[in-house]
Image 1 (cartoon, rainbow, N blue to C red):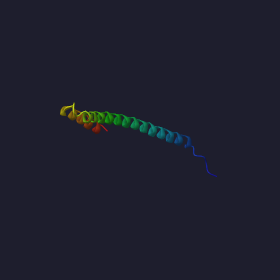
Image 2: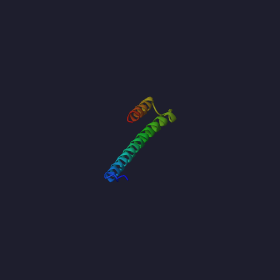
Image 3: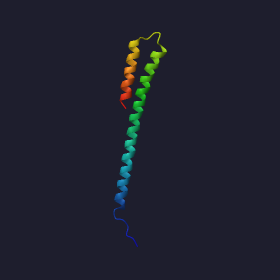
Image 4: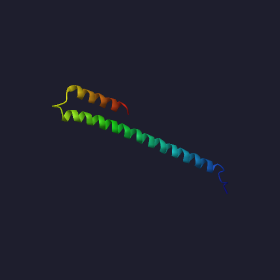
Length: 76
């Protein structure tokens, strides 16, 4: 007959804490990626605006929009 593990409760608590930490880390990463996506979407919208209104926007607006997109892309 085997003896019950006297540390089972402690081991289960450690596993639960690790699972909670992994969940919190995943949630933080999801939030970070959502912010990245929003930045990319806004930057892409600015480029699309310049393309769509090319007859009224100048090259400087397009260059600025592309530079904002590059900054957003590099902030992953």
